[in-house]
Picture (cartoon, rainbow, N blue to C red):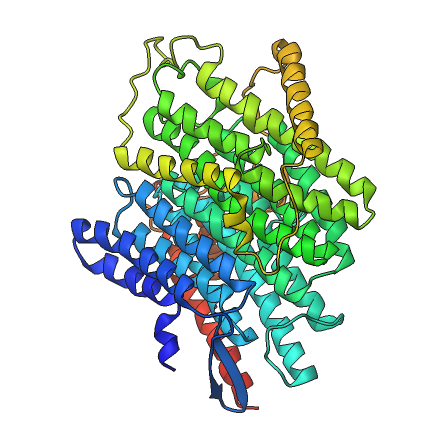
Length: 582
């Protein structure tokens, strides 16, 4: 049991409590020391270490350190350090608490050796990440955060249902590879929802861009990569994942090319790049699992760097739409340089981390005689470079605005200073992307199995350079046709973001142009004769909840964030208690 104190999740969960009760200055120290301690613990654990105990008649393994858990544990702790550094000047106690709890729960998922422990950390992760989104404290973040919570609570219940069915059928809670059946299907649905797989993906692009600039960096690292880890642990070689992952990769990159909001564009690329990993898990060979793990590791680094770069732009300008940016190249040179390192990494430019990780997956597909998949992944890579390496930086830093974005009055926009801790975090992340690209052996040494892939063969490098050069040439030729335009891309989040309002209007006879009815107790006059009539509680309750979640308010929706979370936690606890009485 002494090894339990080396659990990498423990320092961050303890740190999450401490940063809420200490001063801001002491919190600056704790928010860095906690993930550093977790990183030391991740490296200190010997492979094969397990810590378990008995709960009723069940054997639980709360800590399992093996070759698959180690790389995820290392990168989760590492990115928590970087994201905390990036947010030193902007994050306050409540957001820091949520972020550290979120990171610690993700570590708990990685080291969970049984399904009950997995479920507990899975739910903590969902709730903590919701509060990371809500921490921005504006109406858009509030509504997006609550929609995010509803989706992930549903995913958690799928996981719980699958665990209970699996337990009733096998009598075991061990978290190992699953056989096909009802339990496996329920658990798989929960995992692919958290991975952001279409059509269960819209929560990601809906919520991630609404968090704070540092909160989005945290969010980009843990939820989807925890799902990739869970899929690699529970469903390696599941053929359906090959096709689902390919669809993810293509879907995400198409929407990214169309997107105007720079953080939403990068959110779509999370879906696309996770698609590479899911496809590799579906292939299931040793090389493919190594590729999924290596690409998850590299993706956390370069995606964090990309989001830090555009986060600096948002912090300085208050703007995130490419159509109202531009002309920043001479005013935010450092942010541009760091962003472009991340863009080159995600585009698989040789000598950077994305090239030495993504190409393992492409090679694994080739070895498995999946020629169509090799071609599709290369096409997706073209779209990735087009949108993140060319379109976004051109529109954001160069663009048609000339001397920089202007205010509505035409005056040059004044840029807020970017804290040096943001630049320091970007510099560290850029250095790691370069280091892994130049010395891929450092990355490969962490993989679950020995890596035999050689990335820097002449053929692979020449092929990649040709793809990048011709993509850049095409962008240059078509540049007059590719300006960023103020528009909204319609995606599946419309189903739960706008459709309920349309249904309400159809039932009540109201239209979108009419003012929404005021919630009871708000102190404003009613909007029409019907609203002046007394209403029973059975009608007021749903309308108030509707207003909190879907309609604009003066702040984040506070009622669901209190009683709904309590009901969810209490309900899950009651289910577990009743199950334990069997």
